[in-house]
Image (cartoon, rainbow over all chains, first blue to last red; front, side, top):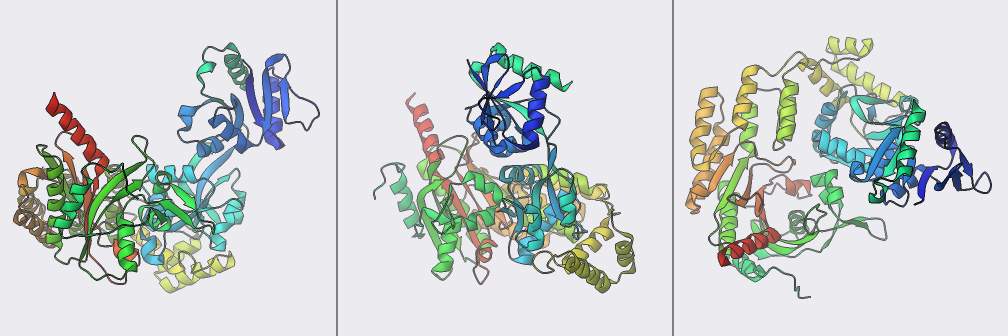
Length: 232
Length: 379
């Protein structure tokens, strides 16, 4: 059986993923020219490499059209319902670190915790004639964190596909749920992360689609072990 | 279009609704999504079927009837009191069971005799279910948010805490977390020396002016979201409460109250005894409660079917008083659920406050119960 591994198609994620695979004894070579979106692994004829965007990898692993993928945990958990039942997180790769966080305007001096935010949300409609608005591209993670974990129901999500951190100042939302690695963009926009507002500490992961045919396949086990071994 | 998948007893139900003097209404299957998300919260989004109009308006397949019936009432400017009934398909994404199923129910809008209307909703629901499921023993559980509100108020808790507790009412995990948190002081930290000084001075106007200025400097509008005044007020409240913790006695009282689960007939005496023993003044809420118990008696409801559970509520901000649900004794499938939602009509845009109570019947579950019952009977 041929095993397909999807790797990020560009940027640092691509370089870091290739480096780990090389260290794991699975040097990846592009098929055709350097810009090709297909590749193979030296010495492993039954493995195909597909270079895809990180969010495509999350989607393709969810519908099982690829076997392994390297992508951010945030994209997997946001993209797939019941992620743990559908994919196995085989290894955390130590790069692509980013936290998905709840951030509010710094000037909200009275709001430090999710409990504070729950209070504010409960009153919001009475005070402002509308629900508390959260700008984010992380619909699923936000709903899980606010509704299931913190019992906050009364808010509205405003979809934001870019420059989310600008939404509170521009007035299109009150607070945001966004990804941050250093926090500097948040700071520049006068936002602060709530003390218990880290929803997910994400990094690049090797993930495997849970497929029945993987059971007892030595190649599947070999890939997982080799990558784990390379992380030392 | 005649529907051939209607439950066999649909015609009987409609006859019941007519006999009960309700006005049958229909609402479009395709509804604007906004009111549902606004009222029930974002969590509903993954449980409804949403789509978009060509112009980008969010639409959904009708996930329930209460909001469409209430909106229709407001739009058609119908006078009150008015009792509506409905029977139709609703659409929800469920892990188990079909995604489209029938629901029927009654919404009673504008009846000012609150106890009477509450009792009528319960007795109508029991009567309809009894007619469909003869021989099954029903079990009705009642809760009352206004009693909990009265208990929290009588405990003399700070206003902010009262609001939090009332907001969490009905979600037992949430209430537990909250009670635990309130039991230890919550210090306010991380404020700059300047803000600390302003807070200490008690000079509200200067504090607000400072917040206002900071917002303008950092490019935040002072009126698009939370205002400097609102932030300052809540900050002061937090500071005032930072050394306060819920005392053991009050915690014990709240837990004792929330653990009450007794036959409704015994509840007035039990609540009175609780109030007396704990020294809490609950008179207003208890007299409403007693009036409802009396009205249920007058309506001829068998008291043996009714249980009061003090912690039973729905954590949505438009529910205000009674909530109830009906199951067959020994089963967990809710066949009918209802409650009082006096805040919903104004939230939806009604100009005046319109008291409202209603219930919905889950026709697919009634069908299942019926099939099971008939299966047992033939064996």
